[in-house]
Image (cartoon, rainbow, N blue to C red; front, side):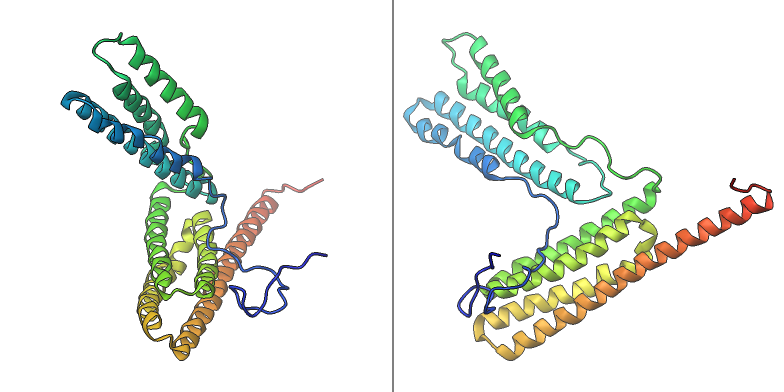
Amino acid sequence: MAERYGGKYSPDGTPGGSGAPPRTGFRGKWPSTVRANLLFIVPLPLIVSAFFHEPLGMAQNIVGFGVLMLAAWLTREGLRAEAEYDARRVARRPGFPRKMFGSIMTGAGLAIAGYSAEASLLNPAIFAGLGVILHFMAFGPDPMRDKGAEGIDQFQSDRVARAVDEAEKHLKAMSDAILRAGDRKLERRVSQFQATVREMFRTVENDPRDLTGARKYLSVYLLGVRDATVKFADLYARTRDESARADYESLLDDLEANFSAQTEKLLTDNRTDLDIEIEVLRDRLAREGVRPE
């Protein structure tokens, strides 16, 4: 059987190369961003050719370039929002349909770039229609409905969404900070910790009642480890202090164990609540004289 290569000089520094790779921070299906990034390159000829036109033509090219760049940005943000939507079992549809507006802006940008005072208005109309259709075919629509929200209280669901969004900001700040340490093994360790934290996110999203038991973890503890990561990364980038590194990794180990234990406790409480509901229903049926055949 094939074995994953590794060694003392490999990025993870583990000899022998055996064992499962660590969990990554994102468990969902990230979209391919290659096509979205190409949208930032396609309009570049417009800005180059703008300097070879008269002032009116220059302004037209620059406006077309700006509209197409805005379309590219909307498309990329729409793909990221869709990836977050797909990764969650319970999710609200994006409040702003970025990809659809990206399609419209692509058509508008091509129409502006293709307009000519000497030619028929049919030409920019064709460019606009083709741009909207091809963009929609390439990237598809935004999610248009809530997922897994049936039977969940809207107010509680919104509270969970706000708490998770705030916690995700702390995780992103950790990822940005640890990059300054310049150590890929530490980056993977932080990513593994984040995967454990996101397991709690999914648990709370599935049952918003768990937010009370998880709030301290999603706010106080994550804020603390974010600040510790920022301070450690700045120190380690300057000094390469191995003692500080060991203390930081030990902190991540302790917190990861606590997050895992709390997530397991939330799941156990949910099972206990279900068992109680089932037992109450059975007792009520028994009092009413209903018996299974």
